[in-house]
Image (cartoon, rainbow, N blue to C red; front, top):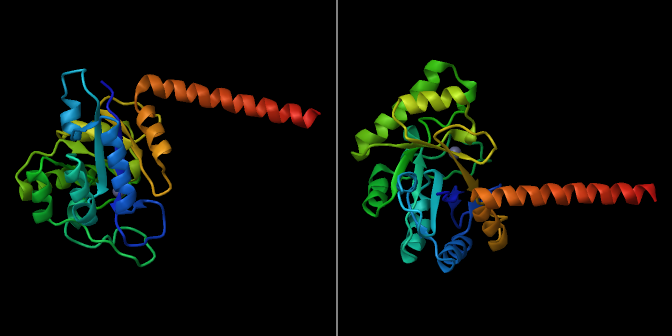
Length: 251
Ligand SMILES: [Zn+2]
């Protein structure tokens, strides 16, 4: 069963330069839409282990583990009876996002106590590495460190087993997937990029520029058959437009 997975970063009223922040009211519209479409939420591990083919499911994920997830997204999700998965950067839990280039506008990360509250509400906590470095730039030892330390730190502080990993910047390769799997990660969650490896699940990021119709397209694109269809349509439209433009030039 192909379950769509959406990725959010920040849900906040606070301004930032960029598109990774959605406002709480945008977020509420999205969740309200998903509920009205009949979706039920699962954590990524629940989705991975789902046996039934019946039902309409979706996974909501948050990358980086910002404090605004519990401040703004959590109450909205709770209101609509949704849960989610947060991928946290273990060395930045409870700290400011100094790992990010952000024109001096800083956002705080969730603390271990706040992560425990989310866990108590049925959420899943996954790893988004220890330091949010681009793993494909690192040597083997450092890659393993990022994968291993983040997993063990989260496990130690929250008393859970960490099963899911989201590579920073969605950058990964076959070697990183193998290292992660060898270390006990059961699922790797990356933004859709066309690369296909066993154990890697594709997600669609939701940005401030998204609308309900683009959200609908993202959800549909995650369903493999519809995805193919969309792709075909896109190509046919593309070739159609090129032909159209060519003909116009000829004239
Ligand atoms: Zn990230």
